[in-house]
Length: 147
Length: 144
Image (cartoon, rainbow over all chains, first blue to last red; front, side):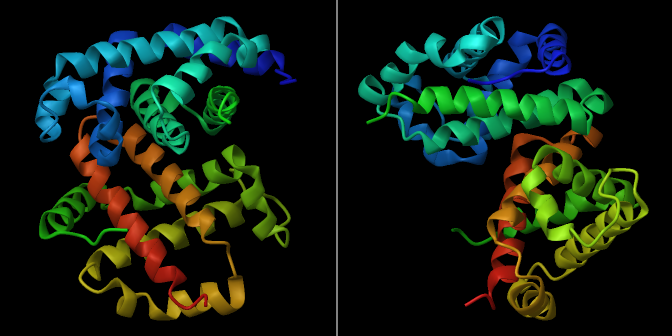
């Protein structure tokens, strides 16, 4: 069972209230596809991913970035039961989407970097540590249904 | 993994020119941040009295580390040769598990993203990430 302190709960709530979903979601996903190009293997139907500019302007990438962030918001709203909340999503990624779970870390690393840019100096080491813990729980939950 | 292309090297040098002057703060922030966000890295510094971000030893070591990274930028054409003595230090004396190089690199990228929200574009990010991975490889050269 994940135990969250009051500081951690309020910090996560604070982060999600401050970030612009329409910016962070698309920016994190497109950054992942650019910095770790092998992740593009899962997005064959997304059209032009030829270079960084194309990826950043791709409307399907942007739309999917928002979907991913909505998923994270779901975790934020259910912080005491992220594993249960994500059971179906985990099955989806494992059985249908066939995503190598090591890729989850690549995306969350990009998320941390994008949120850092959004929050600037407010993204202190303490805030960063809490966000890192939250992302680690999300990733572990998404890995849970892989057999 | 992959080696640095000419374009990667240009991007690293161009971006690092912007970093010049702010290195000390960036190095100290990245290093102290790593100790907070990834507490397992503190195990290498049990001989220090104070591992909090404000401690003099932590601040100083952050500067040492970033000075070495800045030096590596000037040696980007041959990191293995350029970082030879540092590699021997890490292999025979410090014996830092190489997984930690990635962790430190990530914290450096986060700080760069905070300090340069506009300039740290995805293209710059991938070039710096590749560069730091190459530095890590050069540092691990003598491990076994």
